[in-house]
Length: 122
Image 1 (cartoon, rainbow, N blue to C red):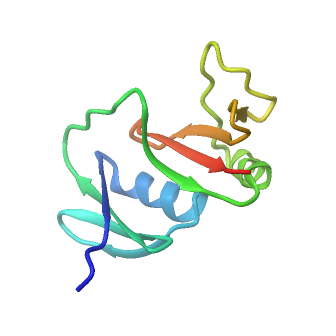
Image 2: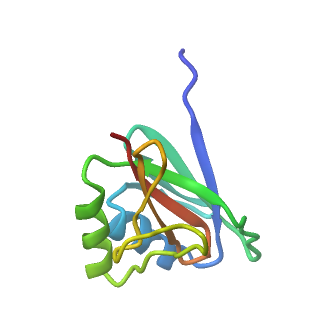
């Protein structure tokens, strides 16, 4: 068997996390058991562990590569998910930053505060 990657996050509020990852980001929901929510993140399993305490990192914890970043950001804005803004980064009105390489990135926070990025590489 070829090894496969599994991504992990944590949540205090499984219902809010499920709404965010399934409805806002469009990940396919697989399972909800006593321990975790499970999603298919476009071929990678994402397990969001249920826990009473969540510690978040100040940097990106989970990211997706998309082909039309502006359209994805617009869809998230329409669902009430606002981009994170970072001092020193020249982000446009939608919160999209263009890196020196030409890659475009927008960041959002999930219901537990994990930083999620959407990236479009030129």
